[in-house]
Amino acid sequence: MANQRGFVPCRKLGGGAAITKTLPVSAATNEAYFLGDAVIASTTGKVRPLKNGTPLATRPLGVIIGLLDQNGKPLTHSQPTRGPYLTSGTPGYALVNCDPNQTYVAEFGGNANDATVFGGVKVSAGAPSTSTGLSGMGLDATVITTADAQFRILGLSPEQLVTNPNIAAVGSAASAIVEVMIINPALGGGGHII
Image (cartoon, rainbow, N blue to C red; front, side, top):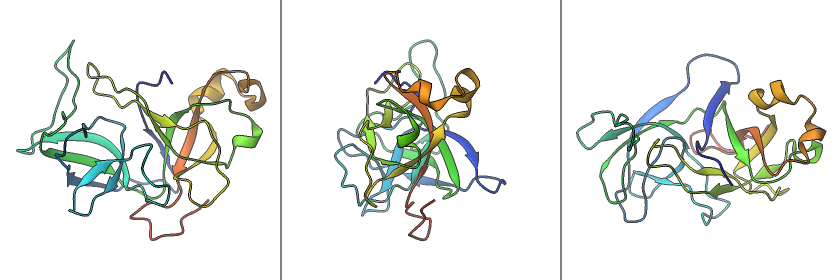
């Protein structure tokens, strides 16, 4: 997967401002935080990255749209070599878009076609970019039909529709940028399925 941006907010169903929360990150080892990372709530009241090994029944909380250091100062780019991210073991805060009506665009690791629309998928963790601070997360190529999927594909992303409005023609591509929604978000009251 060549994705270098993770989950990007696309539009909010019903309009209005997105619901965001500033939450502390778990400063555990092997858990760096990047813009566009999908996160879950930990048992300690902090957020942790949603990993491809995370049980499918784990409910995603939302997506990181901003990062702050341990003093609450926003992390910014230090071009050209360092993007805004928190390294493994570094305390800090994540600004999380946890709106249950938010849609995102992300790279789907397989061929997008009519059969993938409204299919459930899980997260796939690719390599993030330390120079841009952007996540490498995307979507696994396997479409899941069970209720345990973490994301639901709504269709091609608006940007891909402009260049290729026929979803059937995208089926020949190695991957596609699709619009998705968290199926059962942790702050969505449960049972939130489109």
